[in-house]
Amino acid sequence: MFGFLAHRPARQLDRFRERFTGRSVIVHRGFSGDWLEELLKQPGGGGHFRLDARALPAKRPSPIEWLVQTHVLPLDLPQPLFLQVREADVLVRHLDRRGRAVHPSEIAWFLEELEERHHARLRFGREPGRVDVSRGISLNDNEAQSMLEHLTG
Image (tube, rainbow, N blue to C red; front, top):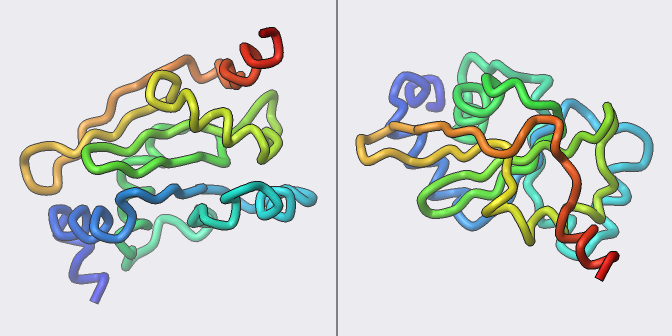
């Protein structure tokens, strides 16, 4: 079934949006140490859908696999990645700092500033199946500014 959809970007995108609008996704290539365990301890941490990108590209991708392999992975951002799927777009922020994944507790701080501080925005176009990509903050910028501001008062 999904192999048929793979050749129809508009249908894949519609299915993706039906399933994931209002949700968050963590795209990763495996987790080191106890990162996943720590994520699950965080408030809402178990609510993030997780997609292991090591299996991509898929020949017969599901809608989430299609979006990630077609639009997210080509951005060449460090992983893991946090995706916030909204009605009109997907905000993307990598969770890497100096070659290591940030502590999962920082995701809550990233969420506070995601509208202004994302690494990429995938905006759903008016044409069926169209996704327009724009870059955001610098690839090297991955501090949780809202956390730092909170700590420094």
